[in-house]
Image (tube, rainbow, N blue to C red; front, side, top):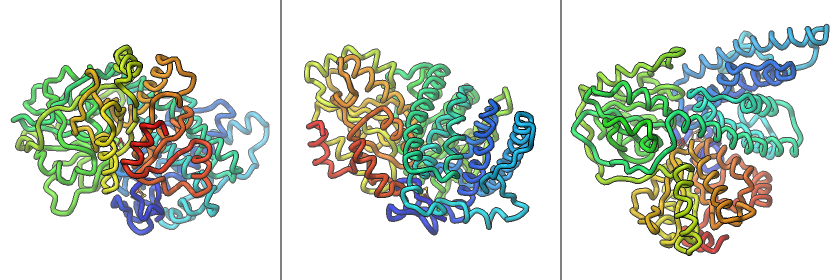
Length: 553
Ligand code: FSO
Ligand code: SF4
């Protein structure tokens, strides 16, 4: 195996025997083979675009496949074997369609050569033998590999966003078309400038995908509102729901109403509390615990069933007491955990097994008390625009610092807590994603009633931060986003954060700090392009960086 897609990769180079995350050699290889299968599908889908033939079914399949390979989402080898199998069948359907369309248009059969990704067959070689031949290291040149993988890793993040939007009924042809074009491009030996162009195009499409998801979420559940979220527990049994899937949240809340079972959020599901549509459920009791990597202890003390709707799912330790209470659904899977099947067309998921189990469980053990405030997505901040702009003009707010992204288990992430503590009292942190758990319980106070930590939501809501920046730019009459009193100190862990980074670069944001380490998949050559063109920087110490941030550097 060779995997270097996340921030915790071994020695910041690549996981080669077993992932730091726990991913096995076999699972990593199957993920590579699934990506290769998607490339084969993409090659035909791209050719079919020329005949104006496309289908959302193919777009969805590719998005779901990419999403399944994201860090800490799908741990079940069987799942990948069946996705590869289905993928190859899907590829053959597209091949037939293409050959027919070609012959119809040209009056003769297609005789061109196609890449192995579009033609290999499991009747000639087993999955086990094929998988090691199609991984990341098959691209020999370091810069070409870096650009290809930056593109594929960014696509994985976009695919997660596209999949969430699709679940709510929002899909766009140009996004699916780009998936096909980008995946197909990695089989074509493009020149460096051509690959760089595609990577920057991925930034534009990432922004578009995030906008689509924002529309899907807010049209379906309303615009997030300022909300105080309870951190304590009640006396009823509870179900803990984590991940990012709001449709699962909705259906779980509906099905638990009047059952005597409460629902708590964990990790990235915290922002569900901010949506008007969910506020009407009195049994949505609060948020339990912190970010994803604390699952091993927090799931123990929760005492009730846990529903994982997306990543990050940490494989439970041996002798844990919660594996029997752990349920997965959608993209997430784990051997030994019960999987709630997808909703039938026009129907709903059936969470009754989780609810029945919850009724037999003890209430959660209290971890903390108090509340957290959040819900500062774009509409809410725009509603406060006069106040915010007034505070900037009066000098009460000197600087905004976007500290969005991911959390992770590594000690170096203490940096983000230290930055939050060290920032002067006239600085406001804008956040989204699980990165916030490094500082959202520090009670950093407020500036004239504006909290010093403004949480826009999940990493899925990072789009909001871009909109807020553009609205501020407009309100302050500035010509360029880089003239704002705004710095970016982004924490990344997995592939959605890479999609967000590409979107920020597309927006022209310069001087982003990215940590705790720069991605291992950036070769020195590609990193240099990002440093030279965008002034992308690694993090330093909290003190140095806060000084530089406050000085606008
Ligand atoms: Fe966190 Fe995990 Fe939302 Fe990520 S839970 S780290 S970018 O997968 O998804 O922010
Ligand atoms: Fe290693 Fe991260 Fe890949 Fe897991 S996802 S194998 S930790 S690089």
